[in-house]
Image (cartoon, rainbow, N blue to C red; front, side, top):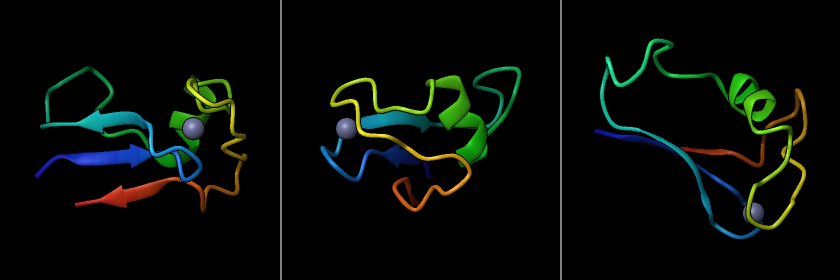
Length: 60
Ligand SMILES: [Zn+2]
């Protein structure tokens, strides 16, 4: 089952993790992901908030 992080404001898929071994880092935590993205949705600019990440939804 893929894990998908979505922006709560626009629904843009910020990151999807399809399977283990996809990259060197494994599944990023929401805070790691927000840091990687500069703390903002790359589409609408909605602040993802660090470390408060209620904006990011984890779908399994
Ligand atoms: Zn967004």
